Structure formats: structure tokens, C-alpha cells
Image 1 (cartoon, rainbow, N blue to C red):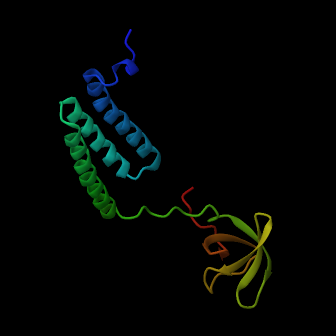
Image 2 (tube, one colour):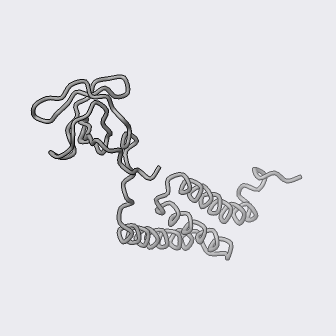
Image 3 (cartoon, one colour):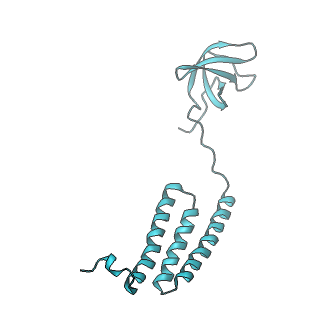
Length: 157
């Protein structure tokens, strides 16, 4: 039986480790990409897979590095341009939107003290025409201030 450590320094070990090392690193990068979702690690993982293909084809280590390096840079630039073209993902509505609050006191300037999630919050009316009620609904947040409406907003939930 031959173990990997018996092959150190022999041509068999060099041939095995070159492409397997590249492919293992490619798998790790692509696996990490599945967690992050940025596409940059995918570009590097694909480049490493091509580095492994170059090693499998018998290319020298400098040529393997050059192949993987150039493809990683090109893939990263392509991923960056693609992400810029796609724009930002639409913001998800806050978890507080649509929740009801109990108004403790209305102030003359249209602000209120409301009780929500077991504590006191500042609230403001969504518009000057919004009627003041004892139970209001959160339609937005501005920092730690709740924007209130008399009607429950459609949140799509």
C-alpha cells in the first residue's frame, strides 16, 4: 500500500497534488460563494478550476498560476460590472411596517407617544390630513421615530 507521504518528492506526488489542490481550492471557493452570494468568489473558484485543468494538462506551475490569476482578475471584473448593471436589490419593508400601536398621548404639533413592543416610542403622523386615533398603524420609520397612519398599509404579507 502506498501512502501520500511516501510519494513526497516523486513525480507521482507532483502530478496528483497540482490539479487536485487546484480543484479542492476551487470547490472551497465555490462553496464559500454559496454562503456569501457575491459572485466574486465564484469567479475566483472558476479560475482555480481552470488552473487545475492547466495542471491536469501538464502545464508548469508558473503557467498554472498565470492561468488562474488572469482568469480570476477577468472574472472579478466581469462580476463587478454585472453587479453594477443589476443595481441594488429593492429594500425589504421593515418588520414593523403594518403593526398596530397604541397611542398614549397626542401632542399639539402632531407628534405622539406610543406604546409598541413593550416600550415608549415617538410617533409622527404620515400626513397632516391623517386623523388621530387611539390605535394607529406603522407605515414607515425615521430613525427611532415611527410614522403613523390611521389605515393599515398593504405590506404584501
